[in-house]
Image 1 (tube, protein in one colour):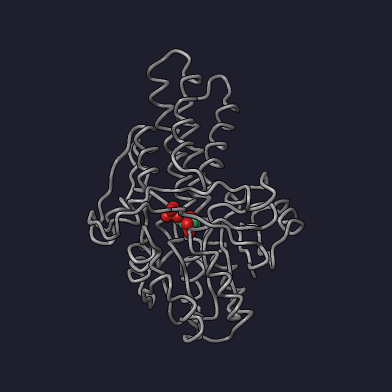
Image 2: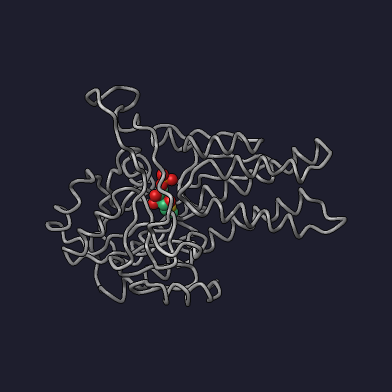
Length: 358
Ligand code: MRU
């Protein structure tokens, strides 16, 4: 399965080449594949804020590389470069609030910095750390793809339609994707016949990114309005909703793209199983429940305008871009450390004590 997935890999969004971070500009997809090169932490922080790069793991990976760029600039400038670096950590940590992978990756980089020994080349060591974070996210996704696919195989023997929301694919991660990784693996095993992709208003990650990614891979996919989800669950024989996550609290509550919560409620009503796929870097054991997860509110213009054209009456718009799905609506949480059925605080604590499965 690992080899099949590796052979099928077509889309990537993040590359570290010749000392610069290269990001596929996700604002321009699916029409144009434009790669932008970044050589400063401030520019990467802005790219995260503007969603050139988006998706929880991808944001974390981009931030890790941004720290490498910052170390290079601060060391070159001389003086107390470690103290100066704090400004870069601050800028990066303020770029987006909900996905904990950003803070997780910054923490990993900070800890590595603290472990530097006399004689170490800070740039080389920090570069190795960022490359390691990137590679290990890719590996985690390969592991989760296999684990999630096995869960689906245990529940059904034939090919069935599934639904996904937002984009939890290669574009959102270090490679392959979390939810889309499972969907890809299940498709290769003949367990998924069709993917219903919610368009994911207002930023349209579903129509612009997920539909494009799956079409590139030759996975049968159609697009639907977010509000069509319950109707499709009732009429199309959908067996699974499979989504990613931006932050998972210690009790198993899951923050993900706005609209995920209503999908989980609808899935329970229609007897559709609900699977969340996320690496352990998305789990925030410092938060007791999802109520404590900061929910990003973005500019109302994302709702009031489409492609720069006003499409709404002259009113204000509320634009929370994430919501929290309570743990008791989740059937399976798939991580690289293993699968948790019906997550709760005790099972989450047990999971976090486990080693990675790869
Ligand atoms: O606002 P975005 O596009 O960064 O939101 C992304 C999501 O909500 C994804 O579902 C989540 O990050 C999981 S990505 C593997």
